[in-house]
Every structure is written in structure tokens, then in C-alpha cells.
Length: 233
Image 1 (tube, helix red, strand yellow):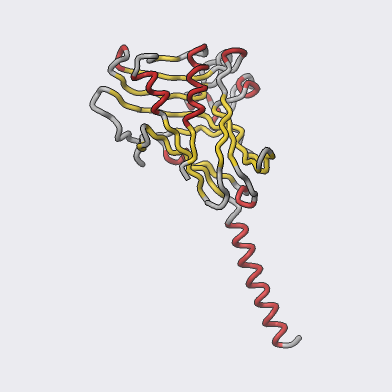
Image 2 (spheres, helix red, strand yellow):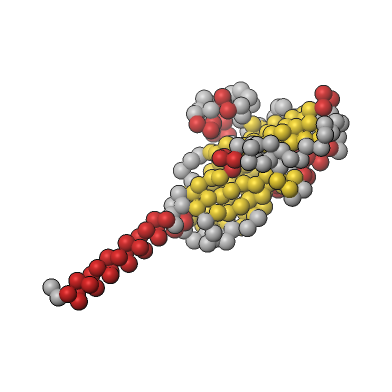
């Protein structure tokens, strides 16, 4: 075999290796959730909220379930998350990054997920991982999972505490919400803002300070909560 041919083979192998490494590198992208109040970050990297205004109003906890996450090209699902559900905790920065392995090879125009847990999962008994009742997002087998939990301090509330625990899966009390957000492919990270100001106006305006069971208020605020999510880039 001639020296020229060997050189060409070596060059081809080098280029192929580079392309493969690039493909492999591009397989995974991530969604980053960014909780906001009036456009400002709610929690810093230590899990502390810089938005506390004395003892008048604060946001101390935001947790929610992101489930059945998928990527779409138009109306067609091109990638589906193997993980059924992710428990996102605004006070735990590690949970705000959701990796999408293999999604980097797909062309997509939007991301879709459920805010909450579907009825089948709710009646499937005790589960593990992010769905473990020990995570503090489960009532009982009758009431099921809490889809969204927001807690803090408000001087207008009795005991100066507000607790919005939104859940319910059966009949007219079903609170699960479908969220769809347009995304442009190309970035390795997609940042989704969670603008909480509107739903928390219900607390600051005195509409409600406590929702701890399924019902009409939970359904109404869950529909409002689905509108919190928006693309930031």
C-alpha cells in the first residue's frame, strides 16, 4: 500500500473520529427552569430567596412535578423522556436542570410536558424515585400527588403563612395541566422561566392563603399556574 494511500486513510480516520465525537457530544441537551417573581430570580444558588421584604411577604418554597416531557417537530413527537416524572424544587439548583439524553440529534420546534401527575400514576400505589411519598408531595391514595406546592409568608394571612398545595386527579377535581413552549433547536440549554407573580397575586390580594385539598380553587389556580412557563432563550 502506497504512502499516499496510508496518509489518506489516516486523515479519514481522524475526521471520522472527530465527527463521531461531535455527534456523541451533541446527543444530550438540557432544559433549565428559572423561577421568577416579577422577572427577578427567586432563589440564589444557596437556595435562599433574595425577595424577602421584611416579614411582610416572602416565597420560601416552590416545588412541582414535570412529567411526560417530550419534544415535538410541529405536531409530531420526535423525542420522549424515559423518566416518567421529575420533581423540580426551586430551592435545589440541581433539580432545575433536566437533561434530555439523545435529544440533541432531533430537530424540534417545541417542548411539551405536564404540570403534575396523571390519574393512572396517582392510583398506582407507592412508587419510588421522585414519586416517593417521602418527598413530601403526596397526600393519600384517595387524594394522590400534589402537583405544585408554593409556600411562604404573607402578612394578610392568618398565622402569616400561605400554603398553596395544588393537586387532585379525579373528575372535576383534576388539576394536571399540559404545557407547550416553542423552542428553537441549536442551543445546548433551553431556559424556561417560571413567572409566579400572577398566581401569588391571589395570595397578596387576599383571594386565598391556604389550599390543602383538591377542589374548585385548586383547579382554578392550576390553570393559572400552567401559564407561568415561558421561554427565556
